[in-house]
Length: 319
Image (cartoon, rainbow, N blue to C red; front, side, top):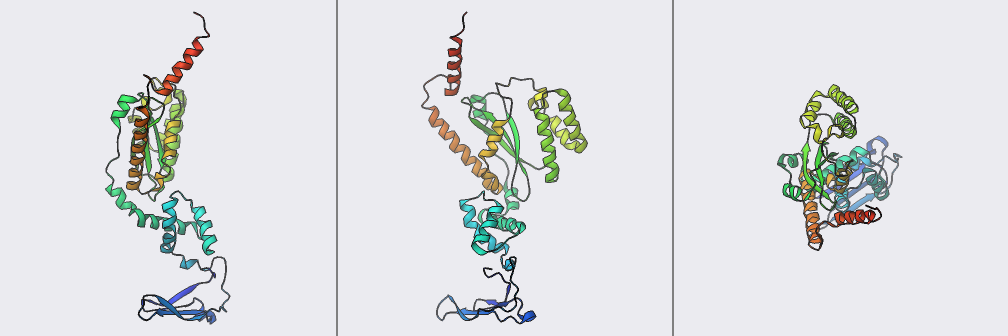
């Protein structure tokens, strides 16, 4: 691979390895290597090596056939342990620097899939083992405003599923993940994304007329998706028909913050992703418990600050 030429194994056995240039028969290229075990040792020793090419079949793309998915996976495993979010373009640059190989995106993708399978198990089996996700209901009922922010984020595995999330604000304006669920509507990933964008836009509209226009477009594209959306009580998630109190929150920035918070987890297999998020939640809740034990005021610090600021403003007004 480093010399950018193609080779093939004539023999590849525990007791002998014989490899020659791929173009030995076509161009009579003399390059070859023969290796055999050292006596009373498990190591292999090169017995004969002809380091000469006469075929002239060298190019930037030569040698890539030896970069199999197995080879790419073996190189990626230690990298993924340290940098699970590494991008394919960074992998391409790394292989070009280390081995002089210009790998295709598909080879990198499948090599990464194999590396993750070796590390975390098969993705199909992971979905099969997934039964439910954790719910933190009591914390929401006892310490949060009665307001939920719904969002979805696309997963990065081969099945292109979605992670649906319900996020709340706790008493001190912190992110409080209430629940998450994996959803597959049985549609193509592209169609699902289009529908998701239409529904999200409809959610943000403040007039009934605008909301109806987008819901009509969803119905024309996928009646099933429309029925699902309508059956989930739009007054609880659409701005245009929301009758409740917003508590000063208009956008779903908190849900977007949650999606960013689990960015690393989204790259894992399903079971590992759910476990990763669970551990994040446990760590977050424990840190908040320790912090709350140090509070001395009746209200949460941020609520106390708002009250204090309003009292200071009131001091400038006359009765």
